[in-house]
Length: 236
Image (tube, rainbow, N blue to C red; front, side, top):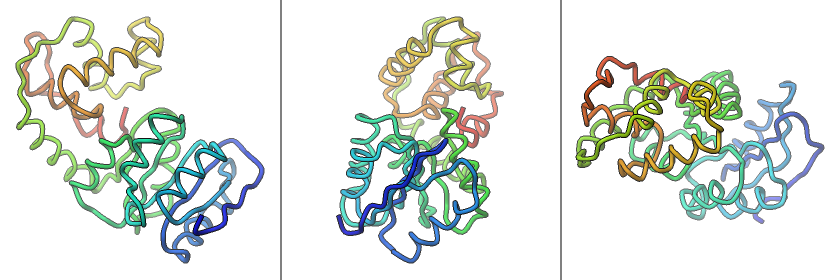
């Protein structure tokens, strides 16, 4: 590894940090010095470091920049496919394409640097709760990007009654656990429905499910009046 991984004792939420600027990495770590419940278990400076951190330390959260040696997008995909670690992208790039690419790869949060530290804490709490978080002042721009992309996708499929219920719950800002409780199903079943729904609509994340469903204008499904900002910013 290009930087030594330092492991410490585990607490309520363990966090690994990856940033290719050592000074910024130290500054990022210092944000958690006085935050109870957050334990920094390791740091790295490359995409390969991120993989090694997850494989060896199994942190609850990975906070990573996007600009670094290696393919961080492929790394995010690999981590999401193999581990339960939640990924928070923490970057200075307010770029819609990069944000969509990171979220499509499986990142659970997209937070812009330069914001108050409370925003990063909120993102961590959101992903630990199983939701998606995007910096609020960047969310409208990202929503526009997703809407533009959803309009380019064919919308010829129709949703089953159960799939309509699932999308309606998403629009209400419900997490998988809350959806499971509402529909009286297991979380595993909800995840299965979500995966099938994404495949059916040819989309890659929860927000695009909602946008694709809107474009379809299903009868008896009042999606046009829904608040998409709730789906994106709180991610639920």
